[in-house]
Length: 294
Image (cartoon, rainbow, N blue to C red; front, side):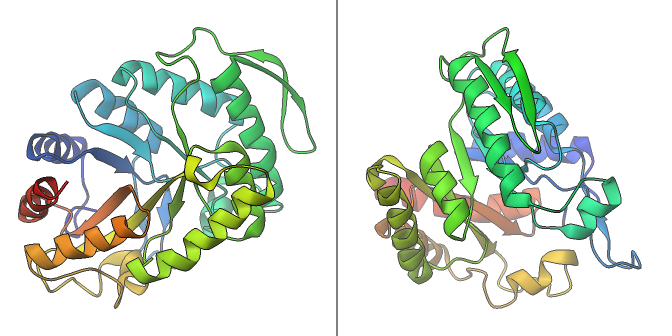
């Protein structure tokens, strides 16, 4: 979304290069095809996530890149591992592999992906993906997915593949996150205060699988209204963002981000409104303030 308009590749390229120049640490691409109402009155589509990530990997130099997050129900898991390894190679080892089970039933149905047993399908998919990326091969037979002595060749630029970040809530998905992921991501709308209870649930999941909670990195996705008057009718995010976006002066926004850090969050994905070059530039002074306090 480009301030309510359709963002073409030329716009995305401009956004990416400006963000990198201004000091952002990472760029994230949502993995969605079509979201909105059944009658298409406010339907919004996006370019295919992994195609965009590959293009961004080729035209950026420093920033990390990732899907926020890639639905394992939209692609064969062995193929997804191959795609991730390829983008990691193009970027020179800058990919963060964000994964999730998906949630948009209308999107699943429209593109012909099965919506049933989403967590069960995710559990099998992440076993195949981690096996290939971390070990270079996997032999897996499951009710939903299979990989018959599959090998990842050539291997990507990192010996054990890109770090895996899982966007998850609920005991079962958090358990899988603790077992397989390098990082956990809190969904959009999580406030600095709510992060405390979410982190406690993640800690519990780690302890239940015998993992030190300190070894699982934490991240959060945050809406930021950089103008002080976010558009309440801005497509499908309106009901999510209403009353849950950060806003205020540069110092107030920096203070809010420090509160996330104080609650264990080491990486924040910001959804800026407006999602334009002007929005990126308006937020840049916050980055400078945060850099000065590190």
